[in-house]
Length: 103
Image 1: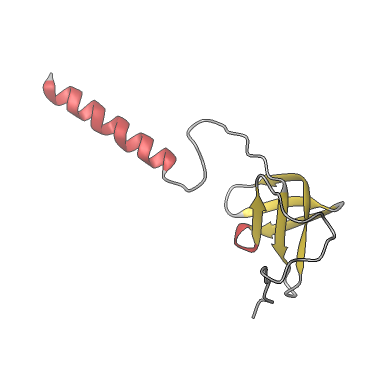
Image 2: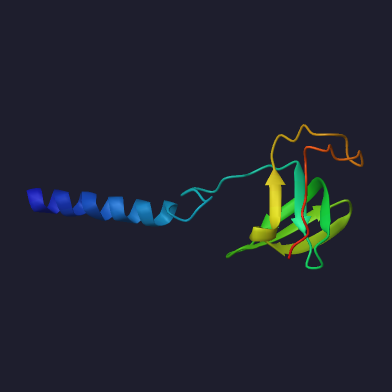
């Protein structure tokens, strides 16, 4: 009986760690809200603005709509920011913030 309980607990622990061990995902469906996005484009330019909508796909792809344009990008090339309180959209970026072109 004791072996069955230990096996059951071990199985549950393994199942939960497998389900939650994949980055930014929870066991149950969760809604994330982001206010601002910064996307590095293939030519090295930066697209940024207020997030109108976004969607993630299995794997690493994100679809982000900012400034009326929809971008399909890798999550490695996109930063989504929650609770953005930076300068007004369209305002110059401060000298403390730098963006480098991809090399």
